[in-house]
Length: 161
Image (cartoon, rainbow, N blue to C red; front, side, top):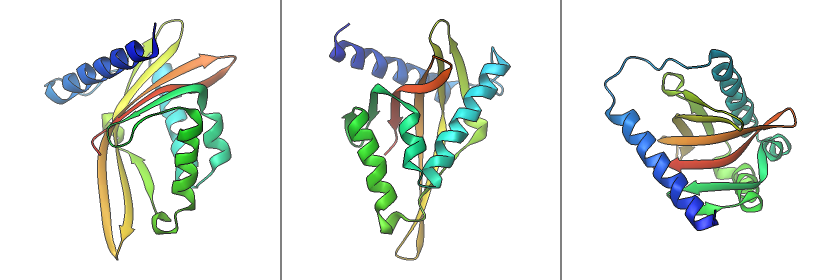
């Protein structure tokens, strides 16, 4: 599949999934596989504990070399640009208190047989700017691959910027 076709496919799937989440009048999410849900919730915490503590070395290990990061505010980036983006955030003294927190009640995890899992949810980013707390709430999709005994993100869709 061509990269542009893949990008359209991922974007379309994300739009459908987000529309379903936003419009659904269903009770709380119930995972098909509780163990997988717990594993991905743990991996999410590993990723964002590293983000919140500015640990670039850990962040580097959580993405595949061919990761594609789709961001409605910045476009599409690959591995090198994604890691450079994290490095820039971590080195930005004006964003020294920037942190990400998962809104746990929004977390959904779906199995992808033979590949891994799709994680969806909403997260809140906070930081102080000119003495005032700034809060951004955004939705995300992470496509996790389980390979060689490790969970890594292959695709990210981040919207709401």
